[in-house]
Length: 202
Image 1 (cartoon, rainbow, N blue to C red):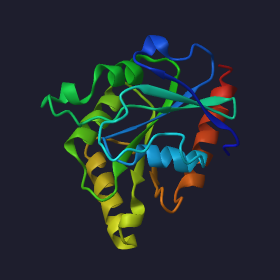
Image 2 (image 1 turned 120 degrees about the horizontal axis):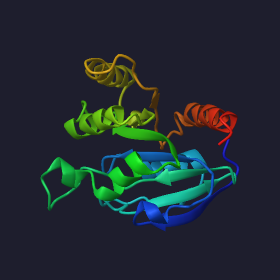
Image 3 (image 1 turned 90 degrees about the vertical axis):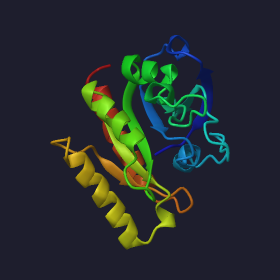
Image 4 (image 1 turned 180 degrees about the vertical axis):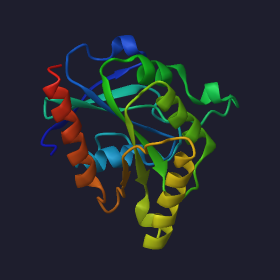
């Protein structure tokens, strides 16, 4: 469980991320998916990640020290690029550099809005993760906005869509920042990941 959470630093490029041996557990998603709210809910620290009504507000890689043993990393949102219509523009260099090149990144949670059917941009990003062998899981956000039946249908459609390309599905979690839903499951999973990291003697 999270006892201590504090802001460490913001980086414009991966050469600026902390150089220590603490592992990074990162969070990413389309702009306005509820990432900052989820991070604040997980850490029970209301103002840790800045919540904005304006999509695309996080432009930097933000590191938060958790229990002095690992970093929670808040990555810029993708897919909100008024000036660029290309997919490449949507996944900015800062995102692709960190996700595919940063050795500190131990696991990535991809956030998707449970209210929407699978979005092309999310599926393209997930496909890139698979092609590059990046370990990841999916968190469905804003679950409180749907009925139980709607939520089950939404998750089911997502699983079905991913099954067309993936033999084995990534771990999936359902969350609501408003109701603190999914907090224990996500944190327990992170604990398991970190146990594996420590066992490897990193």
